[in-house]
Image (cartoon, rainbow, N blue to C red; front, side, top):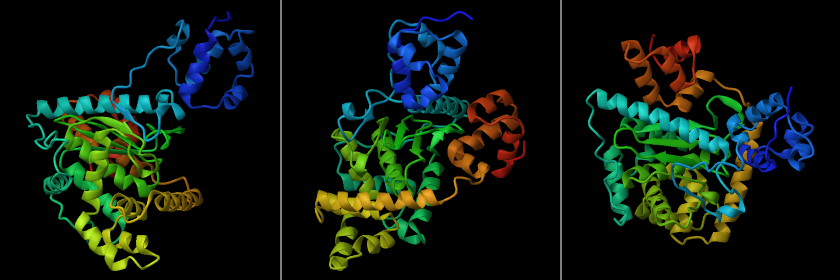
Amino acid sequence: MANVEVNPILLKWAIQRSGHLEAELEERFPKLQQWIAGNALPSLNQLEKFSLFTYTPLGYFFLKVPPKEAFPIPLYRTLDSRQDFAEVSANLLETVQVMQVRQSWMREHLIERGENPLEFVKSVNINENVIDVAKHIRNTLKLRENWASCHSTWTAALDFLRETIEETGILVVVNGIVGNNTHRKLDPVEFRGFVLVDEYAPLLFVNGADGKAAQMFTLAHELAHVFFGHSAAFDLRGSLPSEEFIEKKCDQVAAEILVPTNEFKYAWNENKTNRDIFQILARKFKVSEIVIARRALDLAFIDKQVFFNFYEHYQSQERKVKESQSSGGNFFASQKFRIGRRFAESIIIATKEGSLLYSEAYRLTGLRGKTFDEFAHSIGYEV
């Protein structure tokens, strides 16, 4: 089989884009370093396998230089982007593209059914008072100021918030991998979530590979983006926003939604001499201790050093718990989060009515044949 001449720059670009280590790729492609050095050429078969393993379209390797892959939304990073990522990974780019396809279908589906656009999308100005914005969002979601305290745990409050957001017409997806590919894990260091704003089908994506403690704040942060009408992806490194004004504003609104300022100040002063104050207030407000520590930092009850010390300790403990847990779980229960219940129900109903072909339903959900039918059954539908 004939060998293929490939610019070594393209090979290195594909490796960086994939997120794989060169050492990992060298195990599969022993002559990789020779290809990069220009001392050997891969066969077409080898190049096809390399293409698949690096998630790179085969045609890209026949270009002279790497293509400019435009990321469709702003990506706000807490730290200078040059320190970690020269560009977005293939995993993030592909995930956003898949969500855009789903959102586009949902938008058309809702318009065809005569649904009205959601009035709350882009309903607030970025310069409005944070407390007023948070109140407006809570009113829209029909949440009381102390809504979380009604739940037994902060994880129960997180589930309630996610379900409440979906009921307003927002699509919510929580996934820690690309589609259902367990070999392609999404990196929470690169991004914690992203928002695709649309007046008919706004979509919130939470990186499920991130710790549960961080997911509630991510969700509230994304919710603020919808009301401001600003699509974005973000990393919230160390639970802090980038320097962009929109990111700081969304963070402030998220904090106010989860832990109202006045209630927090009163509770802090009541318990400020207690060494377990973060745990006590976390139980009171039904949020994670990370959110409480972050709120204390915002309101200048603690300094950044205290916050970061606590943050690192909490994250290390959460990682240990996560590592000790089984990586298994109910496949269909996971799909409810990976696809999103609102989107899934719309797909299933359209398929049952005959307005959507099964082949399209399979493409949009990533589930096929009996697996699609069994998933539908798991959330209360027969197809």
